[in-house]
Amino acid sequence: MKLSQRLAIGYIQTKFKLLRALSRKRAAEKAFDLFCTPYLKARRKGHPPHAELIQFTMPAQLKKEQQLTIRGYRWNHPAKKRVLILHGFGSAAYKFEAYARPLVQKGYEVLAFDAPAHGRSDGKRTHAVEYSAMIRQVVEHFGPVQGFMAHSFGGIALSLALEELEHDNDSRIVFIAPATETSSAVDAAFNLLKLKDPEVRREFERIIRERSGKPVEWFSIRRAMKHIRSSVLWIHDEGDTVTPWADAEKVKEDRHAHIRFLVTQGLGHQKIYRDENVKKAATDFL
Image (cartoon, rainbow, N blue to C red):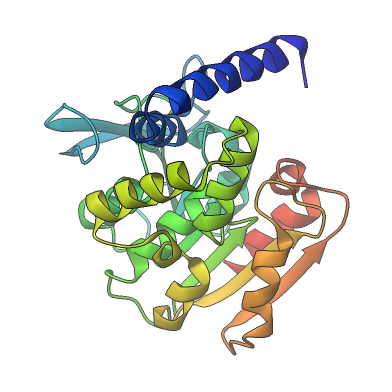
């Protein structure tokens, strides 16, 4: 971790220590805002080669804006079958253009959008409910979609979207290091902030329940998999410290007949989607 990052984290930890002393409710509200804010907003100049820039608008679910403009890319339009690529938290669609090329060569149309508050799309904060709503909008505007590839935060958003989208076992999904359990992400955030106060945690979870109508535990790929019929290739690294393999392993232990696991070693959370063997396995499966 760079010195500037350590200093920033130290400042935030001190800020939350003071906030907690003043008001646990206020500390929880600020923690929720931070949890939904991708501070490292990935961007690039121009757009990927051979890609068409496309956009649509959708209702905002978290912010004061009434509408968000969502921007993304489309390759090889029109084609009979489509694949939608979904990036993770703090990432952007352009980072997955290496997956578009082999899919185009196989005759697919490829779609990839920047999530709300990411890349070229509007917004400053977002959450899984809003990202999943974006996915449903993409399918409505540009679908039908027969294949999905999702990394990290994109995985939990996709699983929530598929619970509401019509699909069957002929559709295919590749999860790459998906955020399996939101409760684990909250644990990691509270550890980073050094927020050990149980009352702040309860207030944080109350905010989620109040705004979504669901408890934190509901935001779970393991739970959602009971309602997903697509054929799934799940790729995960044993040493992933961002989206723990221990969470994914519980899904593996559920022995779903429609999920095949590919477990790697030494790739962690970011290198895994850049790995050539992973790219080939994902595009071949789709």
